[in-house]
Length: 378
Image 1 (cartoon, rainbow, N blue to C red):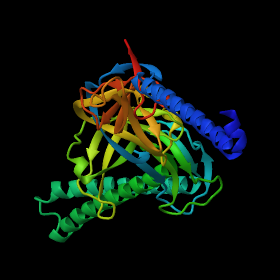
Image 2: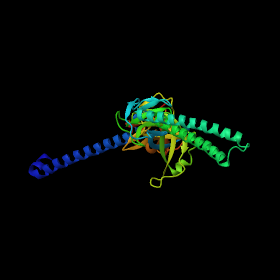
Image 3: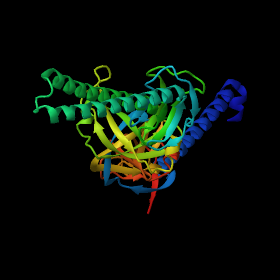
């Protein structure tokens, strides 16, 4: 046989080539069988859980229903304190911005020397008029006694009676001037019209007064109010006496009650003002000032709310999401569901967009992806 191949070398080369091809074929078949077996093994193996999680269901709770509002903190009543007289010089100023004053307390005083002189002159005129009245009354009484005797003429009687009435009118006029002079004297003293807090002062020592000039501005009783803006539709749920809370820029939270609701809607903003009285006994009251901006809410009742703990809420791409057990996928697979969140209180968040009986991953959602398999623990 060998001599045959020696005589025909091309046949020997062909035999070697066939042997090599056969070996490659056997190796390929074996490799395919191994790969197929590994794939079947991989398909048969269950997916490995990526995280052990605890599942919870949303809770339905009674939650206070609030209406959010923004507005300004302003004085309940702001009083402008000024002078009614002119031409007098201010000689005394007793109140500064921030001073707490009582009703009737003197805040400032004008030079009253001129008014005092006028008052003395008017008092003298009153005394003179009263003396003239006494004389006229005595004459009139004598005339009345002698009138029936016929010793006096009718003209004399009339003259005596006229003098008496004239003297009475002069006394009345002098007394009216006395009251006017006394009032002018009182106006030289600027007093607080009520209890309150001075919030502005334009009174300057030595300045000459002008009638109607404002000297001080006062918050009456020191009371402040939050003027909250709400929409016309929301205003129908707001009633006098309802509780309200608001927060100022410093982060301080204040409470109050609805005192009044504006009877009309602003035609430009279509909003309505709600006046909320701030509690006067709040220890932080001194930290807020008229004109501050505040945002808050007005409690309008109770209602049912579907809630989840904050740990179950995952923020991704600017949206709120939760992971729920996907019952349709089989096994312990979870899916990501986008939800809407509302009010928050004591670690709970109001949610919508999931079923009340959904099984939600309680925490650790940041380590999960849609379709992951989890291991549920109690």
